[in-house]
Structures are given as C-alpha cells and as structure tokens.
Length: 143
Image: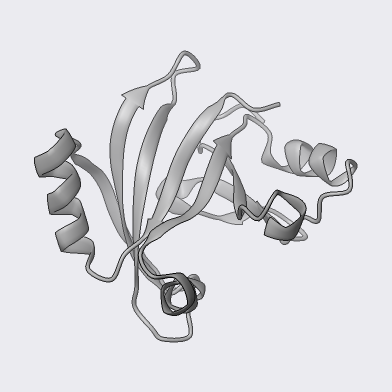
C-alpha cells in the first residue's frame, strides 16, 4: 500500500532561515518551492534521498502566510517542529479507503491537490497515535 516515507512536514516561522539551517547543517538542497493558498502556507521541499520505487523522500518546511492557517495555529499551540508525516502511495484513493476500513478517519472525502502536483489526503491524528498523517500520490504514479 505504501512505498516510502514521502516527506516529514516541519512547521517554521521563517522559511528562509529553516532552509538555510538544513542546507548548512545537512547539505540538503531545495528542489521545489510554492505558495499553497488553500492551505495558507509557503513551503520548500528539500530532497533527502531517492527511493527504490523511483520516488524520493523530502523534508517539507512550512511557513504560514496567514494567521488562520492550520500551520499558524499549530505554531501558536506547539511552536516550531514536526507537523506531520506523509507516506507515498501509487493510489491515494485506494490507500485512504483501505486505511479508512480499519477505522481511521480520513479527513478529505476525495483526494485533493498537494505539493508538486501530487494528490493528497489526510488522516485524523487522534486515530493515528496523535500524528497528523498525509497520504501522497506523486503525479507520475500509476494509480
């Protein structure tokens, strides 16, 4: 069902400072940036490594662009740090259905647009050991 850890989302107050830290400390480089108006964030994807399925694993740094965004609310409650984990799949709708059948609440009725033209859905953190979990289907997946 899952092919890799697609990314770990990290909430930060200053995206540029976060990028500089990961570049300087670990040598990670930004492979993609975008502003996601729907989610109210400016983000940077830093590639960690490639994977056996041809995908990659990333760190996703998230800076809120408005005070009412989920990431801004997370920062107010928790401060900077890990916001969510995302698992890669070739069929996000099928994976969400399979996980939902196990009693885990799927937060999106239908997969929606995500970073880098992916399709995504989220799982309720209360059903996932307190961890907000995202399922990601890359645009070139055959699902």
